[in-house]
Image (cartoon, rainbow, N blue to C red):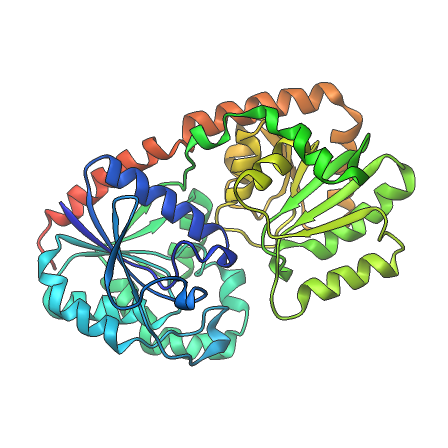
Length: 398
């Protein structure tokens, strides 16, 4: 079975967030299981760090990074990514593939790939990865509505299936958009072997001496308004007045000046000695942060999945996440974390409850690791995707 994946940005463009990591992890697992996988993407965020317009191999995955032209930057951090060279390559090679798996919504590669599938009668699956949530659609609504109705609406309805990563995403997006085609729910996953060394935590405290003897609350992710950092800072300011032994650690980068606004608010509240901004963490430094902290927090206003929360649970770190995080239903059902509303008071009480109850922290950390093992193991996720790929590729294009 030969699969072509179309995605606007790809590994190692890590600054574009969780989908970069989850998709790369999935692709490695698919290749290990014998899938012939090719990725067409752009070199956005990578520039000359990768070869352009030629096929290379990354851990068995055949990847083509195509040049593109910047335009329509309001669509998102990567822009529209107009790439005639990718279109030309796709038209030439599309006949060689059994199925096209399209990841994303608002970019030229997505629209172009779907149109090519319709023209050449190739089955295709679209995975929106949270880009169709009502909250996300509501940002820049006027411009997005025009683009959606002119371009995206028809290619979504014509897809053989829509792949969502949580039940929450499927429930809110499929009916919200009036879609009637097949919906598939298969979660993101992580490679559990990468999160097995729980001894790395001590190095985190050595790296940041200010954390010595502190209870560390960790936020790790893209610094963006959608992540709820405004309510986290307010909640922490209340907590910090009551508890001198708590420290907030914020790991991540942001664009558009939002990170500077968060840092300014921390200064305005007099918390600059009690909050650490580390910038983007990856690899061992990321694992050290998970394993050396006491609580992980993700108070997002909208989050289709919540990969960082899954990674935290894999590291036995108890989590506090908002009810707008896609996996919150599963976490609540398995008593694997504390679910809060998207306001400062609720986040404050969630953090306070967990800080004051060591037994609860232990219980949630154990339940969280079990949840990840049973539901988010990338090998199990890949098996589910392979089954769907087989079903879709054997169908005649309608």
